[in-house]
Image 1: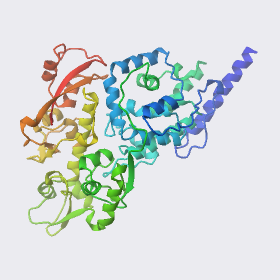
Image 2: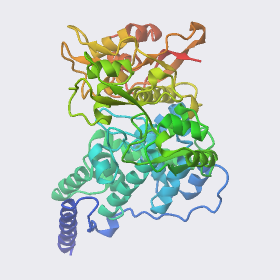
Image 3: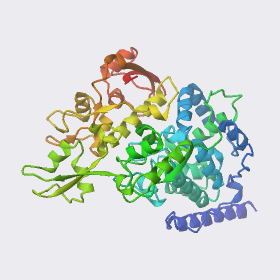
Length: 540
């Protein structure tokens, strides 16, 4: 009997792998098969009905509607609980970042009948920072990779990156989770692990265990360290949020009601004009619409702008009164003798890439008498930052400040106050010299090395002598020193960090880090999880 039972169980596994192989040949959008596992080995998801209480605090909704077994007694989960309890300021800052978006996200999760615990995934992925970007190429709240984002309908163009659009990326990420849940026949652990590592990685790990006649539950699989930690992190967060009496996190209240809405503006519009029509600052509008890369919405869409509900009527009324031709302002320029596209770009505080894009030029070659149309976005911004690339650079600055806020002592982050004023650079192009590095150039120009890299679309930090770098706008130097303050940042050391890497990230020197942290020297071994102090000058 035991031999027959074993043969039967192996047959089930083979059938499961056969079904998995069939599914793997289908694209996510077209897959029609689901994985079939022996039911005794599948932790099925049972989603509770939404709470009828639509008032109060979203954290209380979580406490009522969480449905998964958080397995809080497992050592892996206990370890993550201990880490989060030691870093509660990080959680509070991430929760503050989530405040505008959380209600929308849990609404979309409910529509798909997914566990409400999934609303905590962006805390792990990005600390709820829509401007977050990883070195592997993932971006946005949900840290979606370019190929996956494309598979699930997100546009990624010169004008717009849907992975950073909170509404669009949330829908794409949740659709991906639904696909994975169907793929793994309701096994939510495999679903979440595959979201992090890819379905092929999980499938191969299952195959290896089946071949060895070993258990195929998540905890028994041989996976990469980060994937092994991913599930325990989610379970730890859910357990802590679900039991505030046991784990006093001090999370900021998030009202259980809608805060944001989308307005279809119908065509391309200058973001500064949209901000003015909405009654918002440009910085506030851009923080709510992080998907836009440039100074305006894309000519080809999407045309959806996210605004607070209280600003919706004002925006719609303003759009109705604004003639279509006034939504984007263009300046005509007749090419003169001696002109180059680079000189014209410098004159109008924009870039050659932008002029080539909007004028549909295949290269930089222009002739006397040619007409060049120059986008003008000086309606709200100073003229010095009216170009698309300047706004893109400012958004990078927003990301840096937002990331710093997650690590700082203060957890109060206002979407209206995440950027500092920018001023024009006295130069627009820097030519790389012998001995230059991206960090040294950024330091000498008083700009962030991250902004410099993003501004020039560099895929790595490698530079060539003679290479030209476009210089992003700098933090204004005309402000009074009296209006500058030093922000104390408590930075948590990550795996693979070095003092040089941390210094580059915050545009400080290794010597300064050593001075602020007497127990650390350049030869010290950095331990992940340890906190160090960094000071940065900020405008009040």
